[in-house]
Amino acid sequence: MSELEIQKVTAHIGARVLGVDISKPLDAETATAIREALNVHKALVFDDVNLDDEGQQAFVRHFGDVTTAHPTVSSVEGVPNVLPVDSERGRAANHWHTDVTFVLNPPQASTLRSLTIPPYGGETLIASSAAAYRQLPESLRNLADTLWAEHTNDYDYAVPEEELDEQQAAQRAQFTSIKYRTVHPVVRVHPLTGERGLFIGGFAQRIVGLSPGESRKILDLLQAYVTRPENILRHRWSENQLVLFDNRITQHYAVDNYDGLPRRLHRVTVAGDIPVGIEGKESYSIEGDASHYTSVAA
Image (cartoon, rainbow, N blue to C red; front, side, top):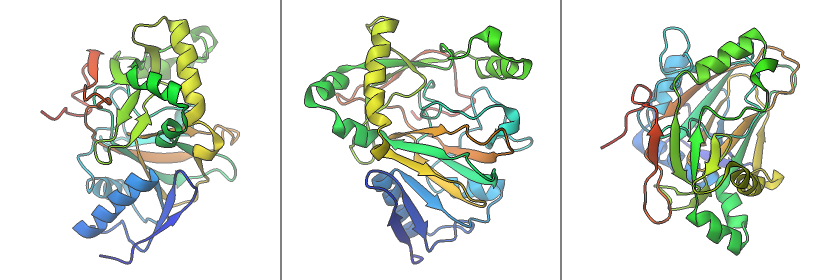
């Protein structure tokens, strides 16, 4: 194993990984150590990675199968497993979310690799939903344990349709070209660690059994614990970096604070399992087939 060094960044989330060249194949011991560090720290930062699209995918495959880029959004041309996160394709994803939770088995982990970085701004915020769950008062935790939420990509956007420009309207139409609705536990049990985390975010739109208004109040209350400043890693990008985060137990937010300057990252995600709640019950799909995006293990 290489001389791996893990430097903790904040109390609840984030670590910098030193002493490994991820542009080369990892031996089993190193890959296991990185996976264990991800279990503990939820988000890992790698500097000077010297990766291209093929190398990023090769690194991701140490942790599982690679998904296609996205259920509805087009990939990098000629590279079906890589999603461009590009300021020229639209505004930053400046809302808290966990990647692709509107499908039955969202990615277990996501990687972002920096290509073009603005001279200021453009940070990615990553929050620990495990820390949020631990911080809930007991009565609120007991309530959350019983709740299930419907996640959808066809949700009530903050910006009404009539206020969108032509490009934004086309992007929204593409994003919702296949409609997905999936019910997940509000408290998800991590399959590797047994840790519990709040599995909500921007695609969670309704609590099963409650009205939209009631749902919004409860989701907002729980979400406020996720986004406490002490639960957040604020990553300021440098060129040639890669960030790996555990999509099962984090949320993230791309900050739109760089005046529309060029900013481009490439995202590759690791196929995940079907979420499970504290009683062992699995998530279930209501609408939308995502088998072209990621297969569901039997």
